[in-house]
Image 1 (cartoon, rainbow, N blue to C red):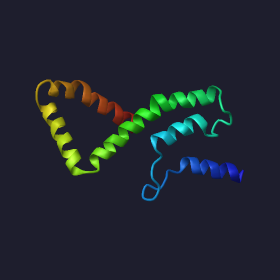
Image 2 (image 1 turned 135 degrees about the horizontal axis):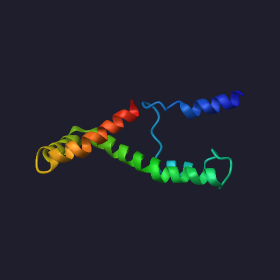
Image 3 (image 1 turned 180 degrees about the horizontal axis):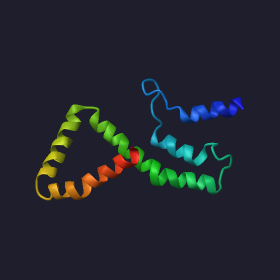
Length: 113
């Protein structure tokens, strides 16, 4: 029982962001393909984990890492913010903001809250 509790705790407790670097994309792929979380080398659960990695985990991780990289430095973030603001205020930007961006952000907020 203690082994299961320890393994469960290690699975659910997030890493310390100040001392532990995040896993690389290659490490995440290796985990999906080779880690012992299914207990077998192949099978439907392993295949589902690989599909999850490719369809959900990988795109979200890559997008979040680029957002993180962009916003870590003001000289990266400010030009991107300026271009975004310019696009939102000109041309089809206001219509896109009202019909696409606002409903998308509302859906994300609804899902998170």
